[in-house]
Amino acid sequence: MRIDAYEDPGTPDRRGGWRYLAWLVRRQWPRCLAGAVLASVWMVLLAATPYLMARAVDHGLEPGDMGALAGWTGAMVAVGGVNAWLGVMRHRTMTKVRMDANFRTVKVVVGHATRLGAALRGQVGTGEVVTIGVGDVQTISTSLTAVGPGVGAIVAYAAVGGLMLSVSIRLALVVLLGVPVLGLLLGPLMGRLQGREAEYRERQSVLTARIGDLAGGLRVLNGLGGKGLVADAFHRDSGRLREQGYRVGAVTSWIQALGVGLPMLFLALVTWLGARQAAQDHISVGELVSVYGYVVALGWPVAFLIEMGHQLSRGVVAARRVVAFLRLEPAPDEGTRDAPAEPSVLHDPASGVRITPGRLTALVTTHPSDATDILDRLARYTPSDATWGDIPLADIPLPQIRSRILLADPEADLFAGPLHDVIGVAEANLRGAGTLSAVIGDEETPHRGAGNCATSHEAPAAAKPPPGADETAKLTAAIRTAAAEDIIRALPDGLRTQVAAQARDLSGGQRQRIRLARALLTDPEVLLAAEPTSALDAHTEATVADRLKQARRGRTTVLAATSPLLLARADVVHHLVDGKVAATGTHRELLETEPGYRALVARDDEGAEDTERAEEGAPAR
Image (cartoon, rainbow, N blue to C red; front, side, top):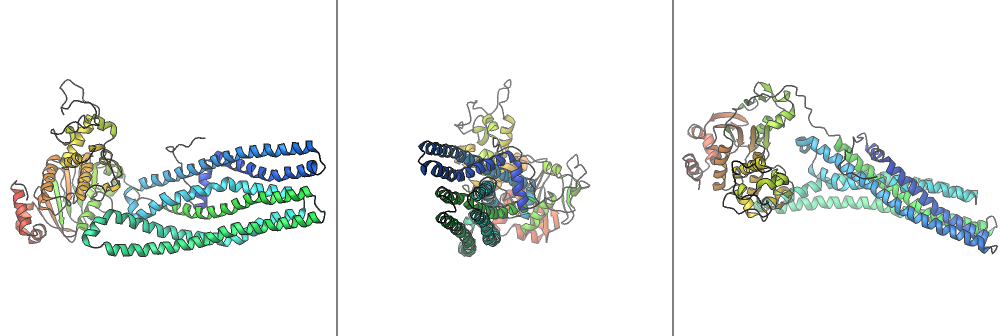
């Protein structure tokens, strides 16, 4: 039975942790059944060896019948060989069970995170998702051991009890009552472990999120001198997690100690009772040998039963966390009206902002959060009374909005991989790029991995455009508009260079331009961007501002910014005070008529001078 990592994982049972584990078993019940049968036969045959040994002693060794002795000995060898094969197949089958549960849980978690989309961050922390993906998935898959060795241990335990009945009823009762006694002793510890494990996982998710924040903001913390304060806080949190880990370890150690010690006492009691009965001639020497063999064989089932309880206790805690995540739901999309067929005015009544289609509009405010809130409402990432044309955004199906309105988040995730994947161009389309000069300028030489196409950017009039030519043209335009050509030139393999998660191996300004290029590549009807050039130097910012205005001519573009270099190129500027429009006009008009705007934008004489130079078409300093 093959494991397909890409098949539909099915609809998980979200009613509880135990039900989720049962769903994982049902999704691969033939494999789980095979694992249970193989484990059961394997463990029963472990107990069969003492039985065959007793027959060899009683019927072959004691009466001196060498033929019988050889026959029973050969049977033991054959059983041992079969059992070795069964052990291999059992382990292989249970490995597939664990892998299937692992892949299936990963797929349902990732799929649900994708469905939540932008609502994910508002409902669950990054650390929680990472902890589920790294720790809980593995714990859940390991807990499914119960369907193989766990079931086999129960069957083997019953089989040994039955064999013991043929030797002594008293010994059989001791064996059959032993495990319930172990369960009574270990049960409270299992419940305590679940509580400690749940608290430990919660603290672990918080600390994981903090580690991610530190990794992403370490440079900023160093610059602000806050590294020590954050390090102290992290030290305190990690200390609390360590203490909680000790508590979990203390309970686990007791379970493991009792799991080893109690069965030994129990098995020693059975051996002692068997020896007394042999001394009193109640059982034969061969039966005494079989009793000792049964006691030894019971070690495996008892150990597996205790391990099964331990793993299920941890697995159900992890499953509850997965179920809690799967129960999260995005905001309901109740839109039934079609979006305007033609470019239309976007209006946010809460702030008074009106976005005229086909123009470059800027939002200027002292508090950046006011502007980002407006952008969130205009993109329908938060509930509002915003309208598109004369239609409330809330009445428009979300897919229609997402296909035409793009919110370029300044902190949007950048996934690890080749740079062309990060920007959004597939490898197949990149092969049609011909030369690197098609992307970063005619002065560059052909890219060493781009293929053997002609070096000229324009194909002959009669020639058929190369595959991916349209994508290449879009990529060229996006990279040029974002002034990101120098980034590609500096990388060893150009667009094929592997970048780290969140592009942490690039500078802040480079990451910002990569995000802008990715947004521009989609060529949305409406582009909303918050501070798209805040990390750039004045020269690069002026270049981006000029190219952005030219590239988006006739398209609706809204920028939340305070940079004079961007504002000077805007068609309309809204000055916001306390989240509401206080004045509207061009950049020059607001500088002349609004002292508050002038103080906010031209913070010093140098800033004002740069603004004037930008308005006159001269490059900023």
